[in-house]
Image 1 (cartoon, one colour):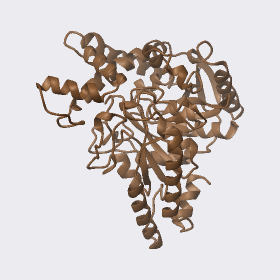
Image 2 (cartoon, one colour):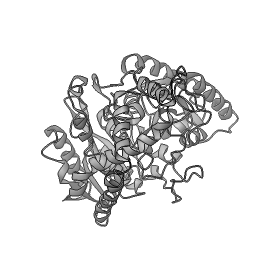
Image 3 (tube, helix red, strand yellow):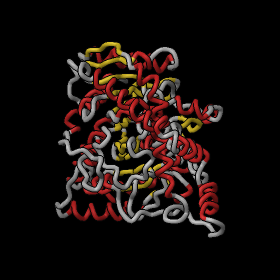
Image 4 (cartoon, one colour):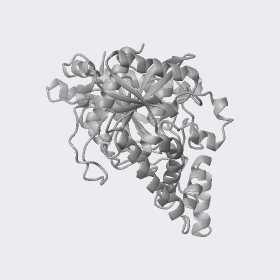
Length: 477
């Protein structure tokens, strides 16, 4: 059944929330032995929430868009009392004293928190293989020799395994919602920067981080987006703009919508089967009345990757400075000078990729280099946004493959250089740098593995993405 129907059945008392929660937690515990989708399963919390909801339902006092729905959250999103590590050893045993705003709002809408999903350490990766030095790599539910995609890999992986009674909250800095959605064959929506509060998120790069929904279908992510969006006085970057009733865009006709096909992201460099499947999906949308035209994003194609990695590493190096074993981060034996102590704690408990990005970011913001690197990247970022804005005067959305290939095997990833890792984000980086909303939806499968199609819209146009995404679900088998 769809998520809306499930919620209605729960509300009517036809489904026990406690029984359903027990069932899905058992499924999570069982599948986690093979796929490693969870860093922590919050069984005790989930069952207490479920029992409380059942009591309220019997008294006819329960309501909410997510009533009884199981919710998992990326390990970087705080849940009070549940170990929250951001995928890193350095935060072992950290249990927040408060809920993130998105956690709070989801629970208020009736969601049941079942656990924290696996991710790249602090979001540093495209394949969810850069996990903390004491953690396991999540595996693709379609082939456990392949990656889930990063960095919200566990969210994408478990969403693919379960039915419509589960949704997940991921987080995207440079493509970390769309990539696992593509590799795992689920829907993943990254909202406009500021549409969803970041309060209670373990920051990667503050000017880029965005929390967004992942689920089995576009309708599922639309309902979760409705629940978590909106102004938050505790978080200064949230937008005061009115919220859309996103679920009403599901199944809405797409006739007359204009879509720009980004020519740089098709052809050379993109797997032929991926290219064909996405082109076929576009043809099916044209049959539904969508108007298309080939367009170009030359500046984003050339500069989005270097701009993203300069900005994100510079901001990450400052955000991770607090994890030093004093106020935050795992403690060690106090000995030597402060510098010696901090060096020991950080060397032992940060992974290789985290160390690489801290070093790169620290260099980019050093005195004498800040203007040449970080500030220049921020200026170019404005040019990239303007390139998008010019196109959105004519088009409702832009389209491309989400990723240029299917989920790679771990043995293939092991052979990649750091630069090759970074370049794999070519298609998902541009909308993230620009703060534009985008959605990845399954467009079919190649060699038994899912292929994603990516739609990008102008700021605060999430409804158009949901409209187009649900149309793809309708026309693509």
